[in-house]
Amino acid sequence: MSALEIVNRDPASQARTGRLKLARGTVRTPAFVPLATKGSVKSLTPDDVTGLGFDMVLGNTFHLMLSPGPERIKDFGGLAEFMRWPGPVITDSGGFQVFSMGHGTVADEVKGRRSKPEASQGQGRILAIEEQGVRFRSYVDGSEMFMGPETSMEIQAALGSDIALVFDECTPFHVTRDYTARSTERTHRWLDRCLEWHSANGPQEQLVYSIVQGGVYEDLRRESAAAVASRATGGIAIGGSLGADKAQMYEVVSWATDELDRTAGERPRHLLGIGEVDDLIRGVELGIDTFDCAMPTRLARHGTAMAPRPEKRWRLDLTHATGRDDHGPLVEGCECPCCAAGFSRAYLHYLVKAREFTVMRLLTLHNLYFVVKLMERLRLAIDEGDLPAVAAALRAGAAPWEA
Ligand SMILES: [Zn+2]
Image (cartoon, rainbow, N blue to C red; front, side, top):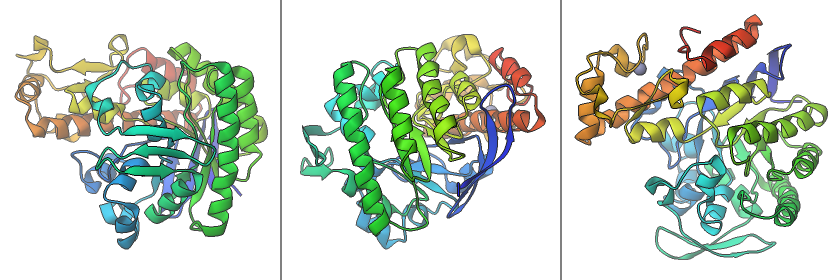
């Protein structure tokens, strides 16, 4: 039986609303999952995050393995208890970070971003990729480390997450079709090892999600989707290189969801690392139930607010001097803790220029509020049967509370 109870379906697309029932609570879907990479949603408290309306956060297996270490977290009863988060937690497998070391700037390349200083932080060095797993050097103390399917599952068991992701190879965009094919096959073998370890040793209440790979090749994507759907996992994630631009990304995701529609039953689907406004709308239309992405919180820390400005990729860059004398709020009608308190663009611009910590928190609150309202609006639209009109209004630049 699927952990996802599907409530309503949009007749015009693959979109659906649902309730994802997990060990620590229920996630209203489609949902955005903020990153608590190292055990905190940067600059926020758990109360802030639940207050905004989020049901689940994502912790990072790779970073938490290096520090403070799974044993220390297990000793506190798991990651949720350690960080005092009252709801469900999803943990990634660590594969993405491990392979980012080997494939250079894959973390940025996959998302079509240029390299940014923050993305290169916290990266160690890969020593060998073998059938057994990956050997690499820790960025914390330079020691040699190993991660394979069993290690990843063991760490995620110690973290006690509600959803664990299987260990996969995240292939970058620049590798050949032949490499992608061989890597995808190995990912499927690793999937079986993850499931074997988990069924013998993993927490029973922990759902395991498999991951569809296959790069940008239609046959490989479809084969991978069918292969992972044939395994008895609690849910399915879509990962890896999704293409060079948005059009290709939507096509690659659609191959996977199209295949999953036929073969995966009603199991929940997660899209890894995607979170721009237009991508969330399209992802929902393609039948994705949950999303995670560093974008809203990372933008906030770099002085950029999310705003209903499709022509500017829904961004308002506060480092620009244009807002220097602007008395208005970040976004008219926004009821986030930052806008509701009456902070002006001028003040926030000044704080960004002065590098005050407070502004990172205020912009993080605003950006996550914008995203949570977007997801709420999309859910309501699906439930009320007017998703096409609402999606069109959002794409045209309506704020989530206006659409
Ligand atoms: Zn706001």
